[in-house]
Image 1 (tube, rainbow, N blue to C red):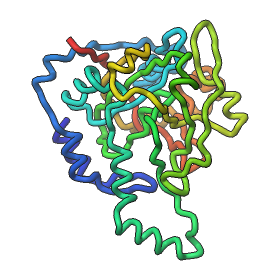
Image 2: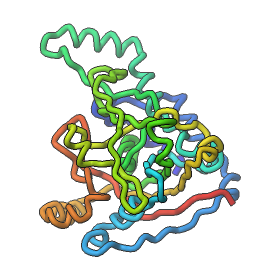
Image 3: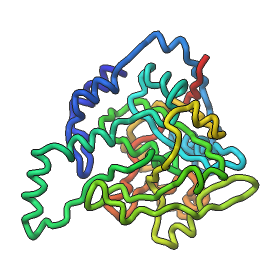
Image 4: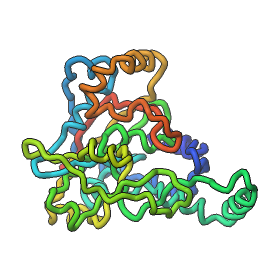
Length: 312
């Protein structure tokens, strides 16, 4: 995939507010490789069963459904996607950093926002009375994570080809840590300033059922929060320290594909069946985007292969 990724990184990102090339120094860091590390990794093929009614209709729905159902009693499960999973980055993920391995998106955004040419241009635009408000992507003080596998999968849609790979991490945080040691903050992905925190919200709404912990989505939506990206504060920055706190992590590598016309028609037909969507909202919520152009857009990628990764 290295040559494929090099090609993609040579193109503009296509992001809504930071449509720019990836800085060269970040490209080099992302694509460092050590093929010898492949022999230190174990890849176990995971074949999630199709769920009745929907997950067998479109390739990859069974994987999304299966990953979304991964839970551990007494823990809240969050997801993080890692792009450009070279063997070097996979090894570092499962042996050292865990979910804290860098995607370098925050660094990419900051490099643009700190650029003098960008600052000058933004200042000039804001002098125009028609453009006093200019949105910017957030840079958050914490680790960006998701409650939905699909949201995690779709977030780094920049620099992707029609077939690609991502790593996916399921992070199981003991509930007694949340609100005490670890704080979870809901934030809008795009705001007026990249460091604006006025609309951030500390999540305190959770639901418990049969020992499993989840967000209380009804309470959150009543407060005007349709949970998308969130960030974790005070989460350890290495796997060893996470393990000491009882935070468990499962690591996967997903082969993904861009949804094409035939599948789009199948998915559009599913969109008409509200009952079917409601029954499967646990993994399909947000799949069709929403009405806010600054939040979710329609999902563009689905997995077609899933492998669980560990150290040999």
